[in-house]
Image 1: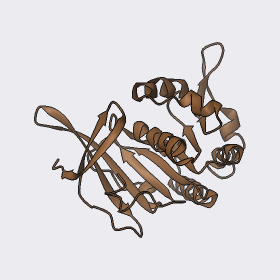
Image 2: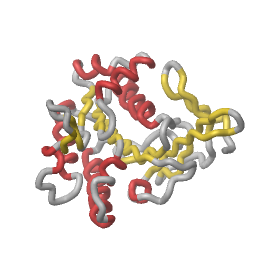
Image 3: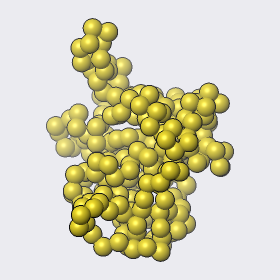
Image 4: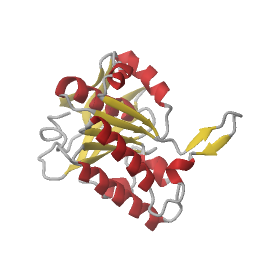
Length: 234
């Protein structure tokens, strides 16, 4: 991944990670945090806006990634920021502390993230996914204001951040998450012949000499593996 991105993700920047269902967005995001904590001593924060963190922890055990251990050691925080939750009676209800009296969109999320960053001195962060946030609002200007503010807030922390966004087509439409960030990584998972093919592409990485090709990617027993010398035609 470092090779096709022109040397790695630029430190202190916010990068969009875009892909459809099953493309490996969450796996790549957790791998980014796990390897950062284990191999480089860079603590991380994972902000879950769609999946139950307990389910993510269980799923990542398949790759030998013990997220609970990292959490106990103060190297990782799994922040449950889903906009809706279940009450004790089993009813669906909004998570009031995230959106109550919010003058600027996503400001409560930003506040919670900053608290956790300070708590463990994090250097990496993942927002999974920004699409869940943008779907909360109808006003496009309001959404743009929120995304721009979120990107600025993440950049100001000095952390290297991945902001996940979701799509259902081979090529993403031009959305705000992609336009407003300095780097975009696309994950493809499409049918080819009688099977499915995975590929990764660095759409842009401002200031870096990166590959523009689609490269073969696979999900193995140790996580995601990118093959920089194997290009793919979809």
